[in-house]
Length: 52
Image (cartoon, rainbow, N blue to C red; front, side, top):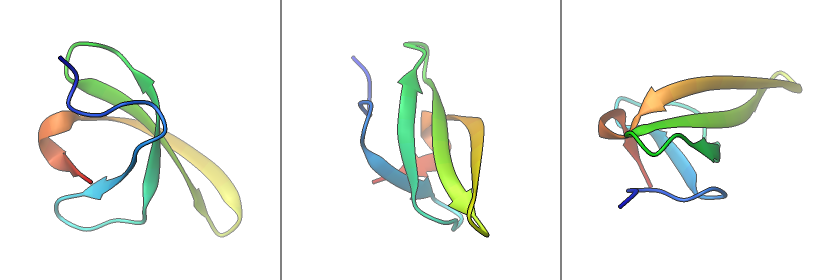
């Protein structure tokens, strides 16, 4: 079972802007989206480094 679902708002445990889960790869990895200086950004993170 996935730890997060699409639409959840998360951040890195080490600190980061709030990000939105946009895709669940079902293997513990998620694509997340956020904005930086008004520009959309995206990256993939493992669930172990994310928190709600």
